[in-house]
Image 1 (cartoon, rainbow, N blue to C red):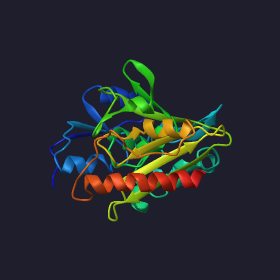
Image 2 (image 1 turned 90 degrees about the vertical axis):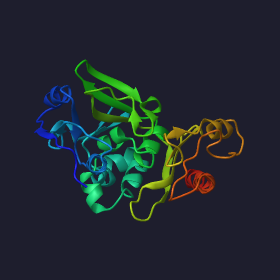
Image 3 (image 1 turned 45 degrees about the vertical axis):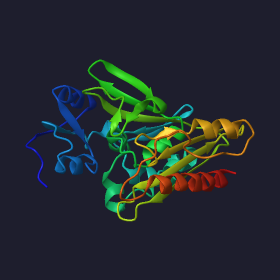
Length: 267
């Protein structure tokens, strides 16, 4: 399908991108989420602001006890980064299983988080990792905890004109972590994705993508596990998605299966 008419602008710095976005633009990086939604007429920005060549957005580094991933880092960059493998190996594991090589080499972590597809892989991983998402807007920079970032289906706490610039992830010595998913065979999106982080002190964080309209931390399962109990049913009290790929009953079943797989991987 053909999109609505739009203007195209290319930003050369974060400051320039923020100024362009303030005029009603929408950020374009890899484009693997935004362009398809525009073709389906689900998104109709008047201006696309290309941030894909801003060097400030691409780096991966360590700052104190945090791994800092630029929003413009591609899934492929993250999958092959030695720093990521060393400090947050779940991110490298998960990134390596996103889409196909074309998607991994163009799609970015910032673009995926901003799009907030309920079946994307990054939401579960950043939630379980207790990450912070740094955004820049006309009023300056602010940090949003991943637990506060996802507010609904394709909806986030990003304000108008704000741009994701970094994802900051605590590095936890001795932690074990994994991301397990049941992938839709064609798109590789998660029909159910489960991320688990087990800290050195035994505390566990559990998050899901693909199960509900909004990715979420499973507080009930966490409370049970951290209280010394076995995990009960996953996604209790959560409205489960049902579509032509998987029924509500099947997704609920998969959530329990992949919770067990993830817990076994960090045991």
